[in-house]
Amino acid sequence: MEIDLHGKNEYQARITLDAALGRAKGGTYRIRCIHGCHGGTVLRDMIRREYARHPRVIRLEAGINGGTTDLVLREL
Image 1: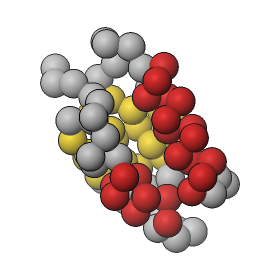
Image 2 (image 1 turned 60 degrees about the vertical axis):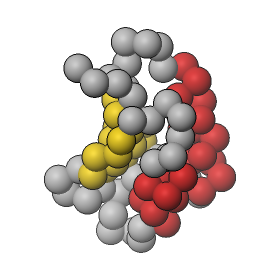
Image 3 (image 1 turned 45 degrees about the vertical axis):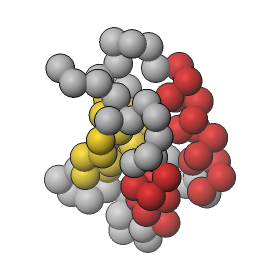
Image 4 (image 1 turned 135 degrees about the horizontal axis):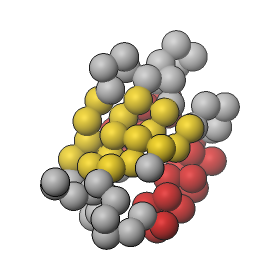
């Protein structure tokens, strides 16, 4: 599953991510959050701070380019 958060503020991004986590079924391996990195790091920092401790998230993985963060929900 992939979520594009460009143009959203922290509140909107949080609502979008919470909805995606609620819709994710048992077979969903990860949710890729596209937050960007050139316009600032507010969304990236919020995701990594708040969703690292979320009960459904096993771990976070930073993207290669710095503009994405993956929420890993289960192991393969």
